[in-house]
Image: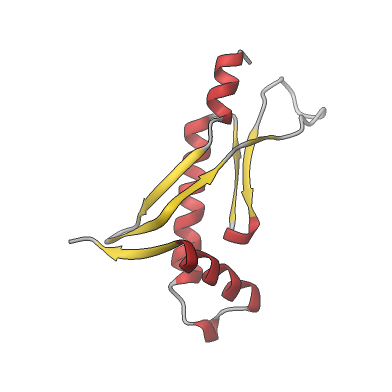
Amino acid sequence: MSQMSETAVLAPFEIWEVMLDNSTIKFFEPLVLRPARMPHDPDEPGDAEYWEVDVPELMISTFDDDHRKILNGVLSDIRDAWKHIVTLPDDLLSPNGKQIKQRYLALAEEVTDG
């Protein structure tokens, strides 16, 4: 991998908003996530280098060898966490789910499009 492409993959993501079906998750400050190089698996063929963004406290965990695909994975993870945890009533959530919901609500709000 050339230095330039490695730099592109390592560039941090600065996420201000994430589109949902009829609303938008808007972060109060940008959510900045930096991909980290994954260790190469010697049992895997080829020499592709994979990068990951892993933030378990926000249910974000994605990896790929392409910066755009990593970003799409991150946005998908945020959407899934918002739809399946943040929007649910607390009494339907596990203790871990409640913590994740609290973390998201401290970082962002959902704004209805219109």
